Image (tube, rainbow over all chains, first blue to last red; front, side, top):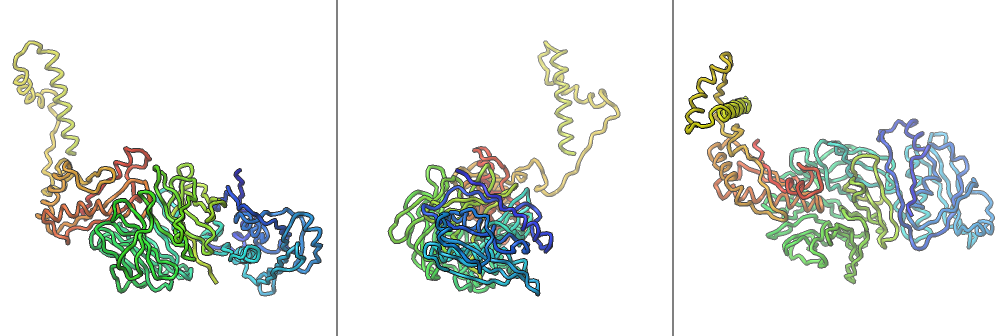
Length: 427
Length: 176
């Protein structure tokens, strides 16, 4: 069953008018949920006292985050309850809620908003968490996501990733844009606009920069762009094609794929473009390098054995070991944050689909039922994978939990959205 | 202009041929008859018509009908070798580059839409590289050429069918 949630809230509209922020005037991304977790925690989220004073509907954002995650069943309640309210735990348990969220919003004299919240366990009749977050008006969405993150962590034992950002490329006609949005597709901002293709965005580990490949110079060149200052650095512009940037975990280097010596091979270069070194040495194609989370290894795609397969080598090069053996076409390796799972795209029977491989057991699982999948990307908590796929002939983004159960999509009203990459946790 | 000229010749010959066949049914030498009538046709049909002579560019690269006008090399599915039918094209451009040392060429490799963006970029590079090597074997120095790839990012044909895919498995030669 397809549940459609249009996350275009009245609050978002107000924010746009009031702040006049440099946001996209076009419609937001639409979220379509098509799968949920096996076990869902029933949770009631009361309206926060005086939340109408804020330009963002804080509890609506929290509810949408938790519902989309697949691990919560939201119990409707018309109640408005401040974090200090007396709570009849037995009554809430009777209404089927294992957990209850209450809170308030207050405008401070300096223009900020104080968002307070409390998470209650109705079974144990006690408080699980409480936060008070003083927030600039333009960051109210982030604050709502942070509360959802806290609820997720306290109830599931895994850090929430709602307050993270994603980067992706949109294509409308001949216009390409590198865009940054919240993890739910809201708050879209344009980082780069071009009449030529842009591919392979990659977040720096601190979430402040994005590396990408732009064709604006009539050939693929690797750039790093500071999202705040807009400063761009050419990291790799050698003869031939320059592509597939991937950051080292310490942000000091980027692995890239260059064709300067003939066929495409893996190199590493300092983030300022200096000290280029070749890492791979094959007679075929070596591309799509990805550092492991510990920075010790680089996974990459190579066709040295015929069709493309995924290999692993040391971060300084050297011998490469083949990692994928099922199927004749395995590309786009991505490592989970804990280093235990490899996600990739595999072609089987003409379908390009998302797979995950448990590196210890060798167990492989297909995670998607779409057929033109590309560009997988782990959420920073390792619970989800975002990837590009197609729907009705147009590019859309899809998210699936690593167990394959939770599924939702982010779509645009027109044009293509592609090449997603999930950003890191931010302070 | 040139195209128009040729069109005019073709059309007038067609008219002449049509006239011949309808009038002279039993003549044994229609070719002579036709040839003879072409000359007066100029003055006969319209005495005020003017034929244009174009001196043309001295650069054979500008000859829209010469072999150098062919700038695309097509590849088979999953193939990265220059097919025999495109060798004359590659040889002609190699000769031109060898005799025009100031000219530089960009070889742009392309793939069809199937598969990942980065792997396709590398496959497009493999096609551009095959053409670059062919040029190199024919004596074109590296300083006069660069092989780059667009992968599947700039398809010429936009469909998702075999004809479109075949059109996009291509390397283009772009003079700079």
